[in-house]
Amino acid sequence: MLTEPDPNYAIVCDDLKKVYPAVDGNPPKLAVFGLSLALPRGECFGMLGPNGVGKTSFIKMVSIKNCSLN
Image 1 (cartoon, rainbow, N blue to C red):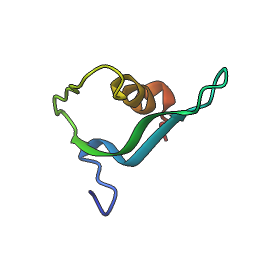
Image 2 (image 1 turned 180 degrees about the horizontal axis):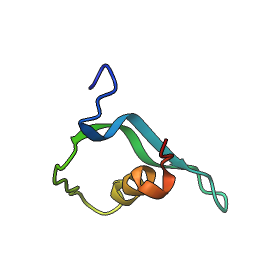
Image 3 (image 1 turned 90 degrees about the horizontal axis):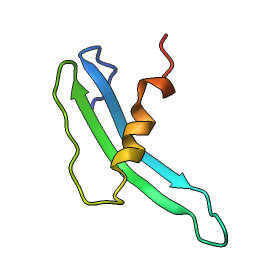
């Protein structure tokens, strides 16, 4: 992982985790756990995997609507 901020990277994530709360007596759902990623600007990126492994949850976590632009 990157040790310092680098403007050459569009997305930098370190050890992301997403847990959906318990609903209707079911336990909490762990959707993303321990995901680390660094994507350079201009990089074409795709996520592959079976249903239910957290692809959509990850994309929602890093989408522009959730980011603060300073």
